[in-house]
Length: 241
Image (spheres, rainbow, N blue to C red):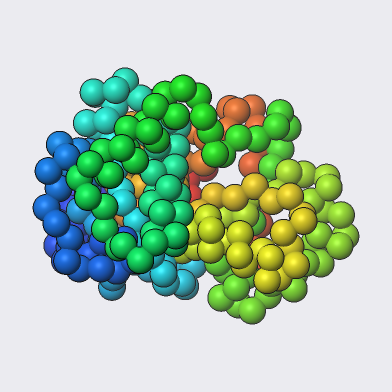
């Protein structure tokens, strides 16, 4: 059964219809030499989260962790950071221009600059030293129309007691930041983990049956993690504790 699930994921990735960032289909062939580090992008119909009951507005570029680890000696947290930061950079660029694809020289520059940042120790997911964190599954609160419960937790001071991390398997970082502003939650001080952080690779650098994030690998091993969900589904399929 495990082999079957793994095979299905490979088929899903290999069946990508060539969609690119912001759902554009006419993409010039990569000639920057970086294609070895990129997995084919998922087709639009696969950009969903069944457990979160949500759809992704954007497609994301997933990286080939095995090759990157071999060539650049990167560990799992660095690989996840690289993928997240690269996708964040792409979204910022595409939001600022009418262009909907990168030229090979631009792609090489984006990737190289992001890689150097990560190798230099730059982190977009960096927490203060705390003994415990709350991970709030935002997608389920939205799907069940229970965002008011998050606001109640904030009003009751829960997020003053334990560091809060908002997790979304569908929203990008910029989409989530906009959502926080629209819902008057941008001053809470949430740390965030968004769709850019999900990968088909586990920390052992083998491909898994679906996108996921091994969240404890991104934290200090002594940090206790409590997952907060509004329903009987305790964990999304994308989170591995």
